[in-house]
Length: 105
Image 1 (cartoon, rainbow, N blue to C red):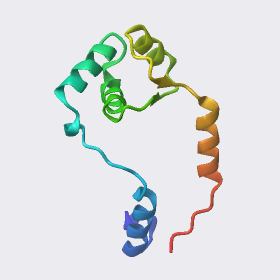
Image 2: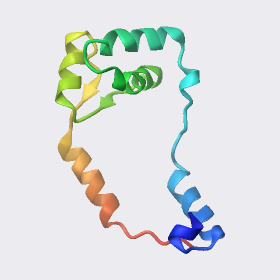
Image 3: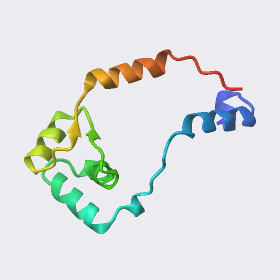
Image 4: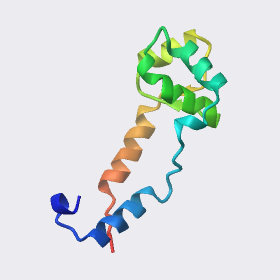
């Protein structure tokens, strides 16, 4: 990364900390077999590539925020209604992130 960015390593480490300090990293290994089984049953007829996202949503007991209408419709059809499709909110968040100035010290 230092070679590509031409930044000193200490600046890269500071940037990595700044970016990841509020992120809670969760290993998929923490999901129970029941969560995986349930997620599989919800996505098997929709898109198996989304199984980890559904499992994470179930594990955290939070809404699955996606803009993929086919996924939302398929999950609802399969009984999973804890989804959110809010393009306006996502756009506002992306706009804020892209227009914010970040100084890495």
